Image (cartoon, rainbow, N blue to C red; front, side):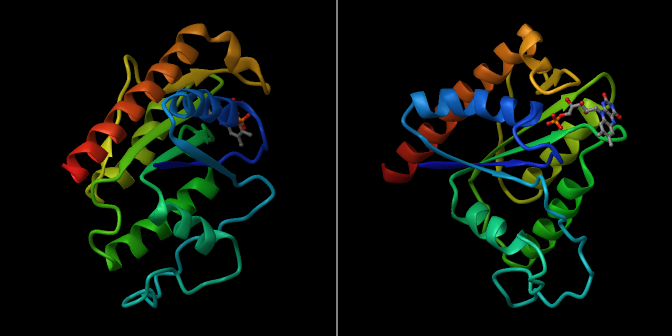
Length: 193
Ligand SMILES: Cc1cc2nc3c(=O)[nH]c(=O)nc-3n(C[C@H](O)[C@H](O)[C@H](O)COP(=O)(O)O)c2cc1C
């Protein structure tokens, strides 16, 4: 089983990456493979509303890394989306990615069915709930199961590493990882029963 993590931050290995890796630690401890894709240094183009993806398995535009990441997503059992909060929502790269993924997903009904999804956000102070919700919306209309934890999946910090000082937030990330592993394993058992 494999979980793909996608970091929408402009900062490589910043706070969002730390959160994703905290979730990964628990997944890996449960024997689940992980892979992290980071959008830093990349520009993800927005959807052009051309509908050329109709009848295709992927977006037809090749200017950025979208196609590769979408393919990895389609091949994973679980998807962990992470974004820093920018202007009280997800980063524009994450928004553009979700826009396009949603349209290509709509052109391919069932592609994400019964996969497991979770979303995490790093914030200095405000807007994290909107960011987590924005990412979860992708899962919720693509027949996926959304994993929760004991609080909404947001952790506070500004400069890289600051999130590690939010002990409650980090404990919540680890719990999220254990819950994600539980659901992935339960679904696998059901599939093979
Ligand atoms: C363009 C930009 C906009 C931001 N907007 C917000 C915001 O609306 N609310 C907030 O709490 N933090 C905001 N922040 C702070 C980041 O969310 C915070 O520093 C986060 O930890 C960055 O995560 P990263 O290290 O993964 O990039 C903003 C940062 C940037 C660069």
